[in-house]
Length: 294
Image 1 (cartoon, rainbow, N blue to C red):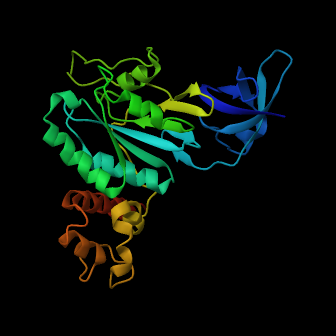
Image 2: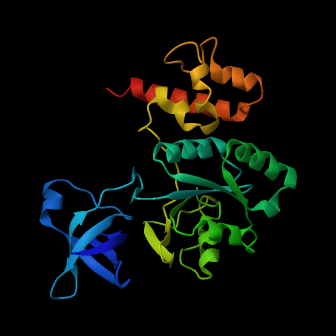
């Protein structure tokens, strides 16, 4: 049995990289996958065998380190969240949702602040310093002229990295700059509604070098993290989780309770008020959906 990596999915055909000779094989799954309702995702490590016509059949999926349901990806080791400093303006609530989601899935996070040429340095550093203080790596880029791209490239080594970002933030431009070629379509502006059109429509892994891949994923118009229970949310805010043990009450929501370790840390300046506001908004959003689940 040969070992491979699923690099793209088109209809029911799976492009699999043969990990021995790096050739790309078009494969179909065994019938039992459909019968047993087993989903194959981009990033899955699989066992396959060749058929007489040169195509392949997928027999097994190796155990995953993680699985992201939307968009469907498996075994991602790293996510780079691309934030535009202007046009569109930074959406830090979305970023905080994404960071919590990555922590929940055990995926390393890097924040990329793009379009740094469009704003004053003070605006960039205000955001960069906040997230660096938490422990996140922050890279400042101008994807159009290549500034900061080399640091992004270094971060990709020996990782399967998913790039995430809303339409218009420069995600595709950044990826194209990494490869020095146009691998992804550049977003343009719709004349009808003057908003960024999402030009990336499917997930595909692009190989950089041995053991290094990047995934361009569809831009998120929304980002749902409903898999996280509201009561557990603070565990996925890196700077908050160490203060949970200082809460007086078991099951503290860190919003209305007295003697809350997290609120005390905010008062002492150890947690930023901006991040706490995001936490409260996300918590209430999750709580509301849990109450209307049934």
